[in-house]
Length: 142
Image (cartoon, rainbow, N blue to C red; front, side, top):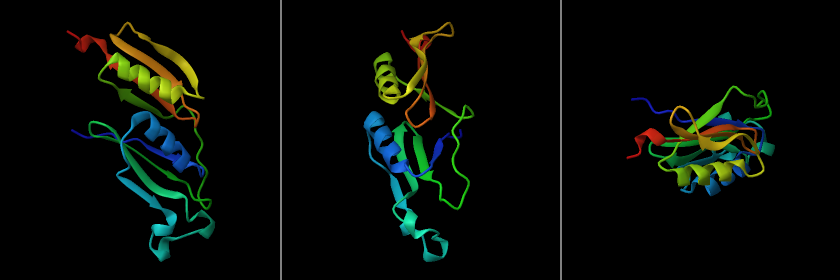
């Protein structure tokens, strides 16, 4: 089965955003490459040498949150409602911890609550404009 790994692009604050996500999910980066580390023929703007070319943070079983800064020579990232990242947790406590962490300084659009489809579920937009859905499957309980 295919694995979905969300990839987020930022306008120069990838490192800040991923340090925030790391504080919520824990773990260690499996990759962190800056633009200065790419071969010389692919380097673009020396002012962006310290920006993130690629970062990968495992956030669960088989799921890796990835991201990068968009170079100034490319179109800027525009965050809208076209991307939401769904996080399925293993308990209500974990759902609350992740939801509360991600919603810090963000905007809650649907507070965590039990739903008619048998989930403990909530939606939010974090302080970086990324849309998240946090869910725990109540039907899987004994």
